Image (tube, rainbow, N blue to C red):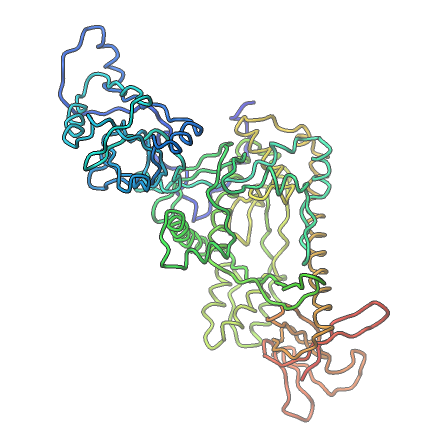
Length: 625
């Protein structure tokens, strides 16, 4: 497959928050972490035979590291006392030549001198250490050996295997060498001033192959459906809860997005690859947030979470500065009875930094994947895009704001958000409601093939991004499986599926994706409404609500606590009386002959209960108190 194929459809410039990516000087590319050979350039010179001169012109010096012991050898050595387990710590004042490993088995730290004895261990790695023989257990000898190693020329010979050596007495300070890495502290590896990180997505396409019955069923379903009390999966549980699930301390196949960021969160390099990982922990958003918030806890994992969160905050702010829309819709949370499965309480999922942190890195990943696949397949890349709303679509929002004295700028997403944020004299909850209403005026976000659009139509209005796709959730969206296959073909890992080249088949695929997505949202909303009915049927109650739309016969209210809305009727819809007068210009409903009136965004107190409009047709009813 020709990696250079393309056409005149060139992807637009990346959004502001990603514009520094892929502009790094190639000379700054990082070396492989598993490098076994390195070179130095210091030390005294010595005469060499003429036959060695040719090799010296290629590499002045080579350090060959001993192989790491196998897991079984390390386990056996730890059991019999030949090896000692501990966390490798580097002396920052002497790095890279002095390190220490705290060992509980001998009750003291073991000193590790020189690069060979460190054997590719990094600060924070959990390692297995073998004590050196007593003849080498003096600091002076080790330091003298290190001085001798500074010879610029020649080859350093790796010390022989001392596995068979008998245990020797430990001196006042124990010295050793690393024989194996038990657990890598990957995320703690920092190069120069940049931070290396990776986003690992389950490699579902390794198990779901094109054209198989499993693939056809997943394609037909299109997405998972999330109901209040259960989830209808797109793929079998053996995949999503088993071999594809990135469980802790288990090797799993992944599609990885590796990126390098500066401390101010500029992405300076990116790379995609298939990989195998063994994650060190599985955390929910709440658990991750609790670890970050607990100042008493300090360990490499928590430190990494805090560092990633700091980067995500910078990325998020840069995205908003570039014009991204702030989505303020809330997600309903039901507390269920474990036996009857009836709702016991209703609330909203809290918006926490841990979820926003993951969101930022997922957004960046999806953007760069879109850029990569569009470069290689300009006519058949699956994109996620949102057209800009027309002025007519935003006019109701503008009229509403004007009616309550708000001057909104609807020229762009950023202008709209800024004008809402800078309104004086309006409480924060009202501003939040204004943003929710603004999102309802937006156009729908849909999937489309790049060949069916003009480059100017690739834009995602809400994210203020020139390109976007879905890559990060292949276990719950078939669109992500398609994008995984496109990316694998772009990297020449696998062939492009034939149906991606058939325009009629592509149209069928994308139409089904959009159709199933709408169905899934409708099913989810219906499930939420049903459980609201079950809840309020047993617990009718009073609540605070905000008026979000004025009508001639009443108004529609939104109840923030339960994330529900409904109609308050002040008179019958067919009534011809003029008891209530509607002022459309100011969006106010007034009762004739009194000073009673209701206006947009006003808070009112209501009563919520369930009524039976017909057999088996319960419905929520809202009445004004």
